[in-house]
Length: 405
Image 1 (cartoon, rainbow, N blue to C red):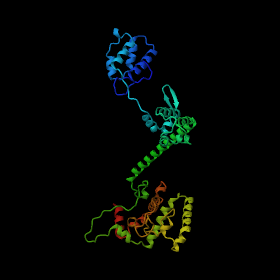
Image 2: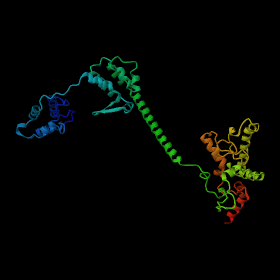
Image 3: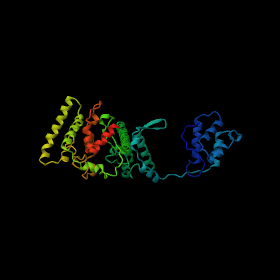
């Protein structure tokens, strides 16, 4: 079959086809150039160039190619001209070509392709674009002018605008400057475009991962033991005892109010301080060198803040927390949000400290050192721990009863 690019002929009078005589002339030349052996092959080649499902195809294919009266290609084509005489398409005006010229633009993504295939050869993108611009300027009859150039220039990428500075004299000069853009510039632009696309893709992927992490942690709430591995020595020894309400005794106050009003004795303070020092000291490795390092940390923080706090020039919550926070007296209930004593975090009305600092204070003040405790269980003085939550004889009896059950 012919490979010449010929507009398919439909026979419709809608202005989309070549004139009948021009089309017949072009297809006849294409068929003759292929040197078909028989007339039947030539007629089949003509039918190949008819538009599918069109009036021309319906008429011509219905004819018998081997009939005596159609013994030649010319006879077959003459019948086509007789069936569809005088077909004239609507001719485009110069104004339509000029409007198309002003809408012509090339994108960075298209320039990044570097070459484009036209038929059997590859053409550089900038040369192909320049040819397109010049052809439209010729059809619009504005080749020697700059009609519409400022509006056209605004829609072009930076590499084209740079090549057109200073302004050219006519559209032919525009096309010449675009062709003068070097392949090295196009290659550099293509590499930069690909790098920008890769960076954008990585940013979008990172943003998606961050959103996934936020959604996964939104339902997570930190509890005192959520970050602590199971360890018998770290479990509060006081058992849960459910005892029936004694009608002869008045209702006990709520535990929160009880803890708020309770003031420990000096002996209890000593025991609790010793227990706290045991736990806090594990913030460093439980080795001679680790204990020395921890004492140095405490001394450095004390030398920096204790003097200011002693003369009242600096409040506790303005000094920041040391590596081992908990500088108020034991059981003073310093707030892990703001550092002020004698109120719990649910009662604190002071502004929150920054998120990371607030998390540091909470973890260090509540469970300092437990995440770095040695794997082996650490002996804990049960009496020291029960004093925190069992300040009365009734609580001590409940504790004893729980141990014997």
